Length: 105
Image (cartoon, rainbow, N blue to C red; front, side):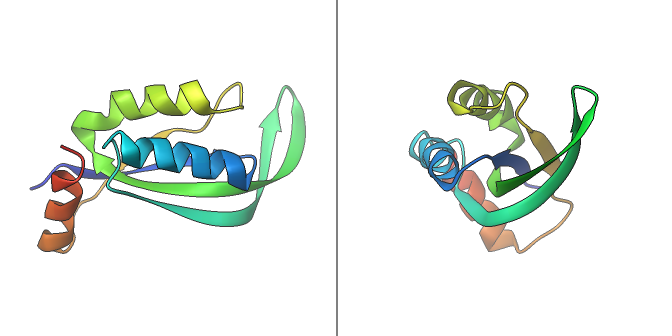
């Protein structure tokens, strides 16, 4: 099985989402980043329940690139503790999964 993965992160603005997405694709740490605009997040931060409008990034990558990808997110992100979660892809269209690997090499 190809080691394709999806990484999730959120951003506080469309500009920040675009900056992170562009950097990841330009550095070949992601084959593609989908930006889903203006999701509503409810979370606990410093003992209080907070609400925010955020942009969700769906990042297509490989397991091998995750540490460097996480470092770039931490470098470019405005949040003190940015979300960065890697999900395993258990199955998918073989040509698409190969495309992910080819474009993150």
